[in-house]
Image 1 (cartoon, rainbow, N blue to C red):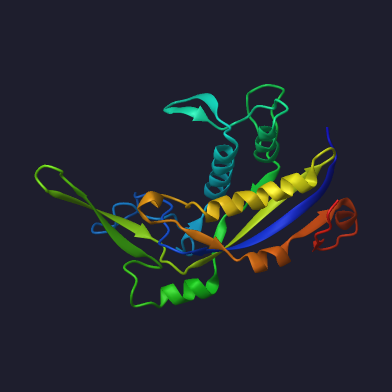
Image 2 (tube, rainbow, N blue to C red; image 1 turned 90 degrees about the vertical axis):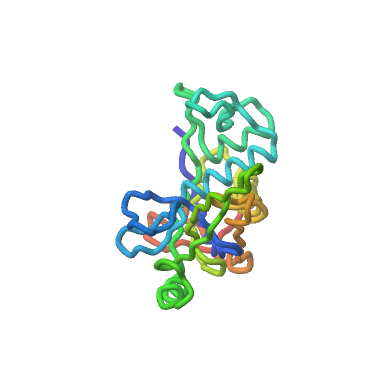
Length: 241
């Protein structure tokens, strides 16, 4: 078993540039609500961005960038996550995001992506707004038009309004033998790819554009080594290996 050398902590401020829709369960929706709702914290009812949504998008975009696809047998999914280690540039994907091929070649994920919570200034502004359609959110109506009869079929989509800010934390575990600089660079690359794509659903129709506050991001990178844990110290400014 490889020795854990350090944990690197990234804190990113994500801002919704356009309305953001990451779907939740419609089971609790009242009559007259949106057809597709956003996921919320069950206690505060504030919208959240699941870490799984961010991590999955970062991974899939990195796979597309490197042309890394793999045959899969997961129901309707036939081109699944890339999990091979074959000595190519694509190895960085399973080395960071993990591989679960069901044998001794399994690789645990090197990164942990926390659920992103809404900034409290954004939450307070939206809670008191007279311009939201639902608590913290807006409702966007989309219409499917029959190409022959022109009949319309409307559908309502709940979105977190543009301008809302969320706080995201990513933890990168570095073990003996890892290429720390490359792994760190690819985590940053994943966020940059996300910024140039979209997060959540309906991205091709305008939803889900996000931006990262890079100035704050660069200043927020910290680490903890064995020595820090042994001496019960807080995370220290990041020092390259």
